[in-house]
Length: 77
Image (cartoon, rainbow, N blue to C red; front, side, top):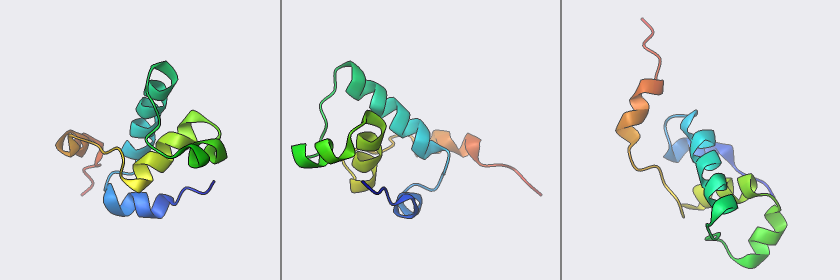
C-alpha cells in the first residue's frame, strides 16, 4: 500500500503533525477503534500505522487544533 505523503503535506501544513496524528490514531485502532476504511483496504494495509496514514490521506480523520501546531514552526530570522 502506497501512502502519498506529498498529498498529506498539501492538506496539513506542519510536516511533524502527520506522524503524531497517525501514531495517535494507530493507538486508538490498537485499543478500541474500528478502521474507517473498507475491509479490502484494511487487509492490504496490514498494520495499524499504515491504516492510520491512509485514513489521514483520504480525509477520514483530521487534526482539530491546527493553531496549537504553530509551536512546531521554527522561528528563523
